[in-house]
Amino acid sequence: MARRKKIYEGKAKILYEGPEPGTIVQYFKDDATAFNAEKKDVIDGKGVLNNRLSEFFMTGLTQIGIPNHFIRRLNMREQLVRNCEIIPLEVIVRNYAAGSMSKRLGIAEGTQLPRPIVEYCFKDDALGDPLVTEEHIAAFGWASQQDMDDILSLALRVNDFLSGVMLAVGIRLVDFKIEIGRVFEGDYQRLVVADEISPDSCRLWDIKTGQKLDKDVFRRDLGSLTDAYSEVARRLGVLPASNVTKPTLIN
Ligand code: UDP
Image: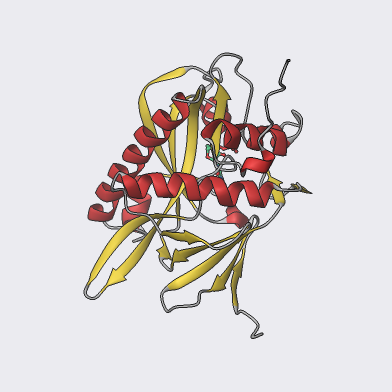
């Protein structure tokens, strides 16, 4: 069998050349990293869960007409996606204060924000993904004004979709990060949601108990990360049937 060409290996995923032109295979690893890769571990099953969860969210986006790179899931750890040129920004949407925003502005974690706030970070591991403004983005040519209008609209639509899906299963979407890619169709370019949407890139809190069901479980040593992600997958009906705990029958 021919060996696939590896295009890129990141912290949580490997990208391989896809079977057709313009496609890429995303392989989800079990590796977990935090604090710019200062904290590292291998979490059994995380890649399988994130592959399934990202498929679930991207398919939902497609169903409501939000363009994204997802084509189809190939197997437990891999999905086929459209090749796109990733804009070097992390687009963060926040509904409640947490993490770096709480630290930066001294707002208690969990405080509801007056409206969703969108932030941009420059994707550069060596610099620790610094927060940037639209001024930097325009001046350095990372994205045009038209791109920024489209990115804002995509980010807010994804926020409404994800918030609703999560609310329906008793989970608060505190914040999340997405990445945006350009796909070229003839003379035109289109922006699509790319990378992944999973508990690695969202903050998800149980609405009743406040229990964290996202990567903060790993960042802050709060217990089993696979238990937390499995809980999200179970509530969304995403876990393969064999993994869903069957209710105990009492006579
Ligand atoms: N996030 C991410 N990748 C990053 C940085 C942040 O997926 O490199 C996500 C993170 O999981 C959270 C949101 O973006 O859901 C906001 O993160 P924050 O800026 O608070 O940074 P953190 O506290 O995670 O360092």
